[in-house]
Amino acid sequence: MQNMESSEEPLLNFVFAFGKAHMSNKSQRPDQDPEIVVLYCQHGLRDEAKGSAWYQESAGLSVRAEMMPCSSKIEVSHILKLLESGADAVEVVACPEKSCKYLVGSLRAERRIEYIRGLLEKIGYAPQRVGISHKLSQSPEQLIDLARARADAVRPFGVNPMKKGE
Amino acid sequence: MIFAEWKPLDELIDKLKTHKKVLLVGCATCVAECAAGGEKEVETLAPLLRMALKKRDHSVEIVTATLEKQCEWEFIEQLAHQVTEVDAIMSIACGIGVQALAERFDPITVYPGVNTSALTIREEAGLWATRCAACGDCILGETFGYCPVARCAKSLLNGPCGGTRKDGKCEVNGDVDCIWNLIVERADERGQLESLSEFKKAKDWSNSRHGGPKRVIREDLRQ
Figure 1 (spheres, rainbow over the protein chains, first blue to last red):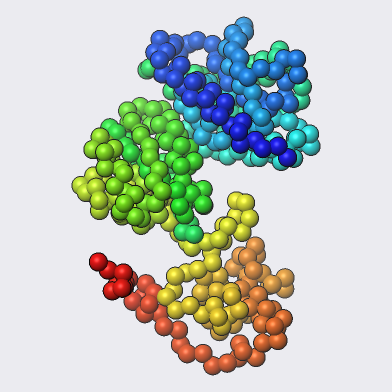
Figure 2 (figure 1 turned 180 degrees about the vertical axis):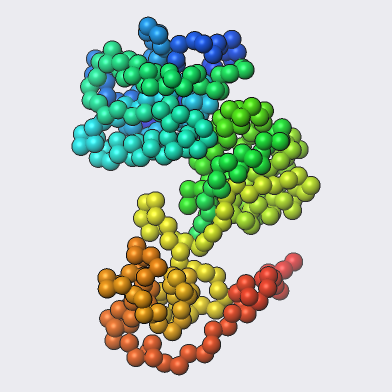
């Protein structure tokens, strides 16, 4: 199996940069389009579309995406920090369970997402703010569709309360 | 390892809501091993508390630190500069760490963020089980390496209670082995079953909590 440890830094940098960008953006309006972060396994996107991070505004939502070596590299703290920084929702795109190159990576990711959803519920946040899809070789448009589905799931709960009163 | 678990989040939020700035402190030793109070858990709990407090319209700043050990004064001293800037501390170390911070940084309030509950081993990923009760009079040499004080629901010292299930599990919890069943099986495997019938002196509980708070002096180590 490949050593994944060296590939952890880009995700941490992304979480940090996302937070920093939002901390400085005090003009963010609570009524703006949902902002969805998509964290996708490197195998979740077609080869020709692969890149590290990208940002796209689509009709009715904005999407920030970051590629990971494996969905299991996502820590609970990464997702909570993204939500704390103002993301309205986070969608993790992991491999189907039997297709995971690291055997149990997507299963671990799924369990962590369930754990996070439980934590969110305990503090009064909609657990729908975090979701996971199991997909392989998606196009960027398909990732945006997943983000849109996540946005639709959280829209009834309003903006992330962390955005209010900034 | 010393085992601890997060207190209910509502309880933590209730403690912090009246403060302006709080230092959340972890410990990278036992409570990190049991995934309750290490650096990873500090970095998980901090955003969670910030989100919960913000949602409830409480303006509380939370800063973080994780010490290598919260039960050693040399490590605790590293917090001295941060503590001057906060009006409360929440420790997610075991009760030893919480008390050490409260002693060193008096009169700042130190809240426990975890409940310390047992001395455990990690049996497998995500599963911890009690192994020791710190009873102060170890009998593991007589019980074939299994501790009935910590691992029998009734802490029986003279054999099974009679409620052992047919599959060898405890009558109190069907997921847990009857420890006396394991003791007897191992004694039998080693051909030493008779040793369990030998007369044993009454256990000396005076060296456990029953004897009052422990205070140990080793003159050879004192300065």
